[in-house]
Image (cartoon, rainbow, N blue to C red):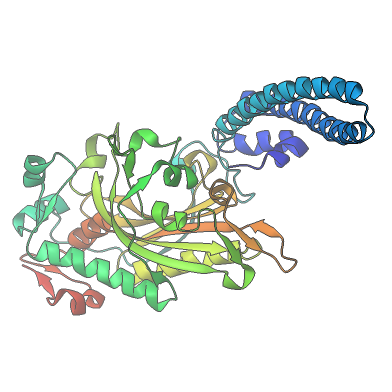
Length: 422
């Protein structure tokens, strides 16, 4: 959430920066400033009344001591009137405070100065590429390979639940487990502390990281308990620090977690949803950092390098993109996407996003650290996929296929216990 002081001090700057995200904030910001002015005027009147009440209370005490009961009673009547007015003002304050919050949560995060302008993924900038493109003699897409080797059953998933809920079988299930273990080990060796969070969160958690209200329609809602199935481990892991004040010496905090993830993905269709390309339930390993504001962009680059090393270790061709304003999330200040090459589909598949949210989430979370003077300061939050499994699996199957088997990357063999899917 943006700080209202920034809107007061330089609303024009905020409006201009949000246009980089193709978001016209003029009406919302003008409404915020109008409501904020009214709220502050009410606060001024309320403060004056409360001050007057205190003064009169002292005067009443003095009058009673001096035996001037009639004057004291007259002042008591005035105090009673002021109390009624103060109750009215407090009600108005609550109304405008609620309105301000409702308006503020509609504003996206400001994009970092390095974010390129653009309207869609076509305008993203390629930062760098790596890996070697495979030269395949066999060229089957992963959904056909999955059926051939009986490792993923999409039809059974439809029977049990619906489209987008595959069933992994035999070596396919072992490959999933191997990838999760390898990713977690890779992250913990780099200093990330592993946690295992719940798979459902309350409304406050969804609000804290910015999924609510912006992406509420994409989340699975358990109505009876008002819980939400998590779209990513980022939500429960970052919310560990909701309403927490850290010491400066505790920064950075580095956490990693594996969870299944659940996304409705309403409106998805066509080639983008074939096979493992887009699922409603999928496995993902996440990394999260709580960083000092002065260090967060170094931390972001470190996270990008970390994920790059992980993708590279799997032997997959990849590229790293800096997202343009029009392709960024509501909450992000700067995002790098990782894509791997799908040899059979002849297209790039997104497997990770690594983002710095600056203070946008911490303002919602009330996440602070105490600086050297003991003053509470908003920390910066960052997160990244390390990695999301479905498209990694798709690329591994397609890029490593041979006539009668699929080779497993060397780094995974100690985890799978086998070298080939056959």
